[in-house]
Image 1 (cartoon, rainbow, N blue to C red):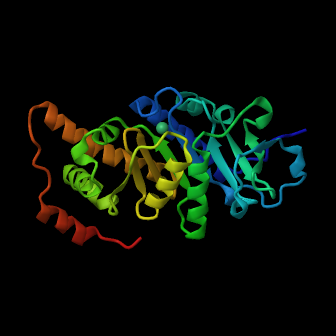
Image 2 (image 1 turned 60 degrees about the horizontal axis):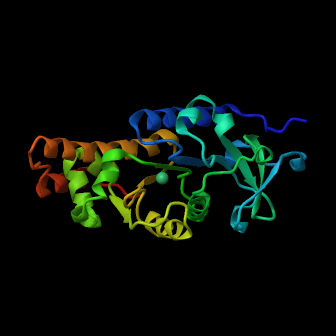
Image 3 (image 1 turned 180 degrees about the horizontal axis):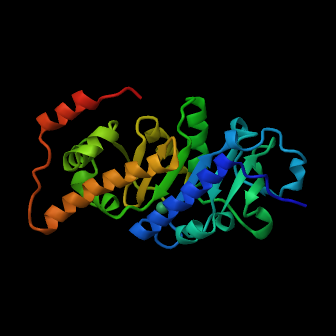
Length: 272
Ligand SMILES: [Zn+2]
């Protein structure tokens, strides 16, 4: 019996975009070993009424999400590698549809619970953010977590573990950072990876920002599509990389002045 839904053109494009970004994350060195995870609320791209839902393998989460019953999410697997995800998405991720009993899900595409597959260990972080994005009725449906090197390195420097100082630095190193990431990054203090505390603190921070830095760990970004979400991380990491390039040349970078940043703010401000 067929254990996968038919993949529409739209969904196929989404999966290809995710695979493309997985490749970049790996090539940039931002997804070492099995690091990084991606999820996408694909509900509108899967059939609303899936016939014979029970033919799909069932998996379990250790917490229920009643508000997400009936919603479907593309999600990368625990212990899977982005470099493999780039080549074979269906072997390294699944689309899960949250069941009526909301701590259960059906694997409707990709790798299934039958073969021991589990979604990323950051699943609570992903699902609680998706729940918030649905409540907010926003177009944002994608979550990417990765370990961009220079951005993460900034969180190792005590001086920059202050949100205002960190954002001032990132904006001043790359005009695109000020133009695109207008809300700045949110800084979440260190918590054990995969922990409830990390998920809770991230959810709090995502209410004010589209990109979060996890102190001494990595970053998490949300967006409307996969490439746009990745771009935010890329732009911010470029800012951090520019800072370190100056530092390694023995220069204290001057960066954009307050007046120059204010000018960008005036010219490009938008309501989100
Ligand atoms: Zn991580």
